[in-house]
Length: 340
Image (cartoon, rainbow, N blue to C red; front, side, top):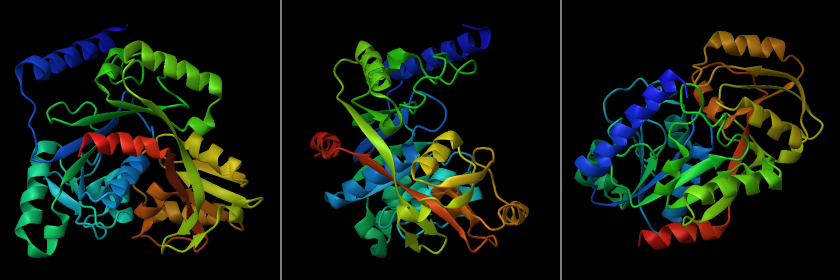
């Protein structure tokens, strides 16, 4: 292990020891479910959080999402949404928080680096307004919370990306590991995401690694299934509309290769694929260039990218690939048995 990774690991160990033996995690007056990962980059947390929030609402809970709002410029604790669309733009909220706010209805999204304070803020604000009482949280979903030890959680769900589970298995900055493998033992439930994009041998190898460090946690596999395409105003078309269609694709996400593979497997013929940096803030210049370069082609991007384009003039033939987090119902049954 290199010097910087060793220093990072030492700092991590000291912080973890502090919360395990000295500091007591803050506890909200409602159940908390955390979804997170061991690695940097995209493991599919946002679709998982969206799916879990919808399922919680369907089962009679009033969920509220607490998110750091990574890269979002709004510094104070604030509502990204009160359940009826985003109150901030993508630059203020951060990509993932903005997407959740745009997609989810009847589910508040609160941004704040200190998630305990964000939860208390949500409870106070939604309790003080008669029109918002129906949204008073009975359940908090902690987005990207596996390393947020300051807040007590009732369930820790750990996501592992089947396409790139652990990188080179080294700690940051030499690798993509945010914590060592031993951290797996904290997880109550473990999900191998994008399992449909990996061969069974790799899935079994990941399961063996998990069981070495956490033999008790149930392991589930999930896929991120494309379900169709949708335009900026919400109009939808089936997945068949992509078959044998020549397209220009672009994205500004952590794992563009997965997006590209999904398009190809959906039958699209990719003529050109443009990669922007993760969390890219689009300007009108970008749209003008894309429109020019994609002349005569359908233009496809991700849902996370599309919602960031609302304030720009975009090509009429631009739409997003819709992705659904797909997992066995036993996963949800296992979770909600624990938080009744």
